[in-house]
Image 1: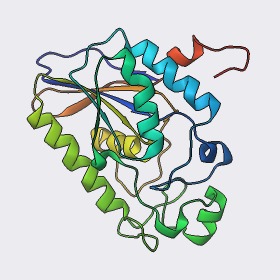
Image 2: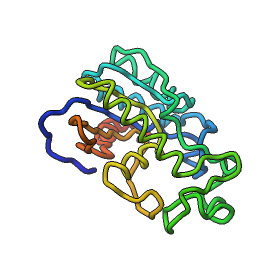
Image 3: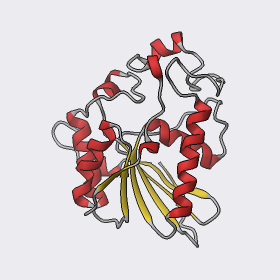
Image 4: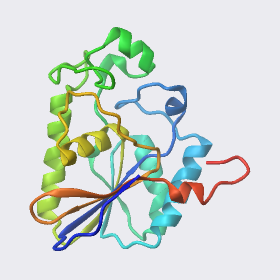
Length: 219
């Protein structure tokens, strides 16, 4: 977890939550824009996140249109008093025919897709998928749009690991094609603020709400 001190002149607050654990998360399969249901653990993660967020005030609750994010958002919603608004631009990167494969399979068949261990071509896309550059441009555009159109507002967004990775890279000035490990736990709490000029991270990858609510089966 990374925390930074609060700044001054904040005009937009954005809390980003990755969806709860899914069956494909557990199996190590890439989901992209194909859906996989939340596991029992994923459901408990979403409920724990909702309980923690009950202490915060938000103006809007947004969610990716993909099922795993929507289910998470709807489990969180009762604690916020808000209806879920669907925002398709916060959906995961599309990986085309690679969706459903394990990371080991993808590394063999589509080595240009991920930059976990090597430089990759940001223009590359698996058949039917989305290039890294296009995906990052999509996420940057929606981030800037909300910063400008929702000044003074506090937004809660339920989204995906790839989206969070793109945002983290942009805010920290990391090249989109270079390998970099980014901690993005399921149902983690991530808070950004925009001061009218730039986004900055206040908190990243916080899972204390999950640790505090473990039961006999664990979260």
